[in-house]
Image 1 (cartoon, one colour):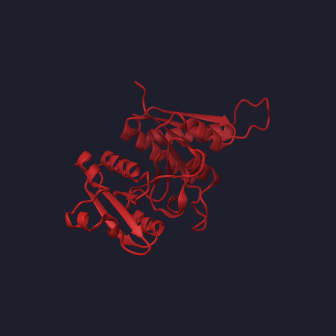
Image 2 (cartoon, helix red, strand yellow):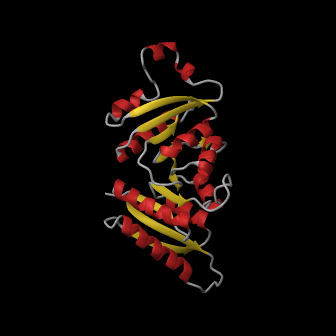
Length: 262
């Protein structure tokens, strides 16, 4: 039986340490193995390793084993650029985890280049670890896009895994979003977005909030009390992916880890 694998990038920063610890807890939760990867630039063609990167990996593995001593944790330092190495490693992973390099910088600055590339191009689902640990709900944005059902289903799965509640949020700049459901559905107390998943995950308490305002700003506000927010990528062109305004806004300002579900 092939075991699930989680890959986490390490570079010795505070954001990286938070990502490693979160990934270790996630591996324990999922019964997965954890692989820690660090990149270094080889300046000498005859060089076979890098002491600095090896130390980063060692420290990261120690951190992971402290959080989850029963998880199979292995680490490796490889020559090359971090983003391509992580993207390659993610091809055989169920989840790729990276830290937020904005820690200590000014609010609103872009996500670090590695995190941005990974979040945009990885074939696996990606988590960018931000904010502080919380015991709140799993939050997901709900719209009428073609991937909405898949993203809502993933959010229910994550909530069930964590034994958490789910908060689905529909935000519209000019209204509260209820009009899209139709009078008949509203009158009958039906929710075509959540009801199919409620029946599959009866243990998950699920609430659907309709809020006026820009979706990215509303979701950032809801993340203040969340333990995870789930967002889907926007398809663009030939096998291209864009995060869109909502995903980009969450990666810059969310106060909890952000899962980009593939």
